[in-house]
Length: 171
Image 1: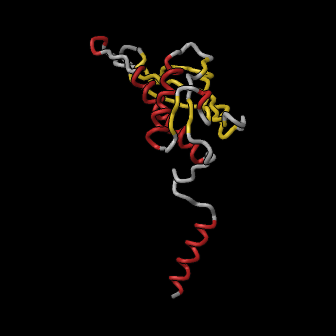
Image 2: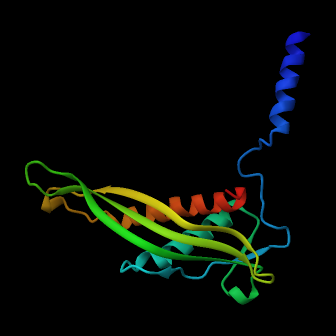
């Protein structure tokens, strides 16, 4: 009997403390049904991210939410805008024999916001959002394959997952 009371008390405390299952606390206003995600702005010389990031975010919204993604910001209920602020890549591991880079990391900083188009209210924003990705470089020139494009795709996918989760959970 005491054990059952103790378990019930713990469950009541957990429920009252605001715990919830991840992905189920959609904090976007119910009036938002369509979202436009135009190409991101770019303050860097790396052009691929500005197209790939919005595409990845759109795919993530389609896969995980009830929102319809539209192309025209003027017809959307909300607009997700972003800007790539910084892109830095640097070697992290060197091959001791050839003294060439064997792994490269790139760091991307972006800002993003989701705004209610009708009211101008900011629903969600991140003024500084950092993502990192590491990829290896073959030290054998005959077996060289440029992994940077694949690494950028991985970074865009991870960034999209993080952005959509942050919007849904309002973190």
